[in-house]
Length: 117
Image (cartoon, rainbow, N blue to C red; front, side, top):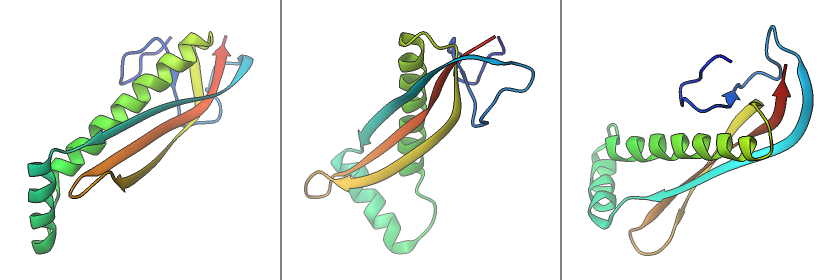
């Protein structure tokens, strides 16, 4: 099986099919979710940077880590259900406050677990 960026035993594609491979069995929807926050100092500095504009490197790193964690959990969920691939993978994300000065980032990866021939 071709390897993917996250080096799991599960192929994750945003496509609804896998060219050159047939779906032998559709298992169903699978999800992986990651929730992260920055520490107080990181949130404070991010708020200060937002006043002056510009790229938010700290938040970008946090979102990237959340996305990678969600993909890893998605692959594990698919593998646990006997799948060797996830098709139609998408991301959903949001942010919420968990208290004064504490922003939380949530990323969910989801798709259809399948067995490819």
